[in-house]
Length: 415
Image (cartoon, rainbow, N blue to C red):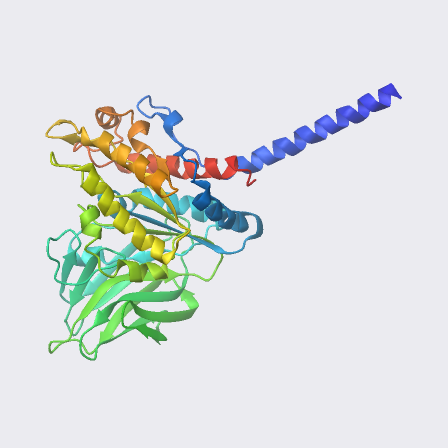
């Protein structure tokens, strides 16, 4: 009898070990490989810092993520907003790609795009832009912008009768970006009407909003389309604030808005931001605004926090349950010495996160704190300006941020 009990106990142990091992293997499938072998990368600091009230907003986000992961149901919207780190698309694009591959089965909505090339600046590499006509611009970084702005932080304007913009979502990342709904953010003067051509078919908008833009249904789907306009010229113009490409599948939709040189004050210039965020209804906002605020000897943490709170309040008006994840400023040089304001921003983010039931990913500490940028430059992870990362560096911090979110998700018993 004793031997039978021992055998039964052994079987239970083995089975339990197998189940635990299988669960662990399943958990590991959600993580991505990140090269943390270089001593300048403080991987032990790469986690989400949370507070007593964080679960009030993090739990609803994780519940939606759980429904996608376990049941393939629902949509989670993440909005990543910042300056040049986000506009370039390598950092945000890396995180978007990981969510697409790990939760969406390799297909995703490309979400917000902007024709950066037509206004003479850089943009993400996972879509290409070409166009015709003459375009001018307003950016939120201007002291007195001429045109209204929203989700993109930039507006491109044309009155050229032959103006057009072609967006082609590339497949080099291996992700299927097929869009079945396209929203053109913008407004027209006079009798100007936008239309798109996709797959040789001309498509008219099915819904127009005076505040935000025009909705196009693309039932056959597309990964490339051209935006045209009827009625341009003779004083009539179109103000284009961006284009949203959505599919109709469950999964994580990762939105990114970045403007080179943008500060908190810049984003407060975007009078249509709150209205256009209704297209997103973010479940999580990843804040990366701060490097430009703090790159001055006259930096004031109180004003910085006050500006941030205004932005946060706009987002809360769209989704009161939104979770705010603050990415601290990376270590950088100001006047050729390590910027002492970076630690002040870190403190401000910790305070903002606690006050708004948010979390913090401390990139400053991941880099090793004050002076860390010099080591990252010497390891080819940062550019010589000690502000921007190399593509390898952007990919690395994208890997680390994604894994930090997943670590917290798994830690809260969602697997």
